[in-house]
Image 1 (tube, rainbow, N blue to C red):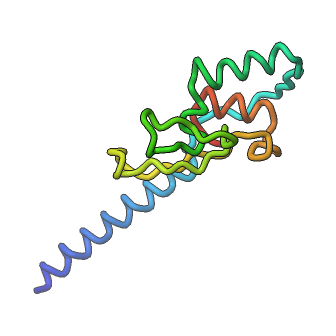
Image 2 (cartoon, helix red, strand yellow; image 1 turned 180 degrees about the horizontal axis):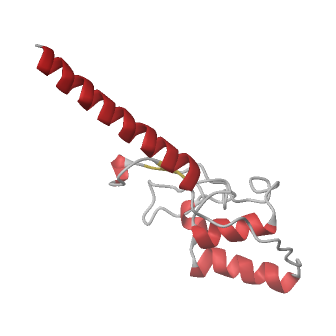
Length: 127
């Protein structure tokens, strides 16, 4: 009985060391992303038009960040919901977890700096 107790205590001690090590690693080493750059993008009609083109046609950001009409063929975004987010992607859509698209309208990103938006797009992490 004494030997069994020692084995259990050693296993508990090893598990505790592994858990503390994992928590320390996650809290100090992750997320491993750079601080946002100090950017200030000048808003011009040309840049707004290019951003609209990129978000709607090239990168297709609005496909996920808008409410979609799943009862219609190809599930087009509902008018007036572009960028509003709230669409849920989960196991019912064969996703491995649950993801809710964020609001990427100026209202949803109102307190984000240009550097934080740039970092979110290029490094796929939230500020």
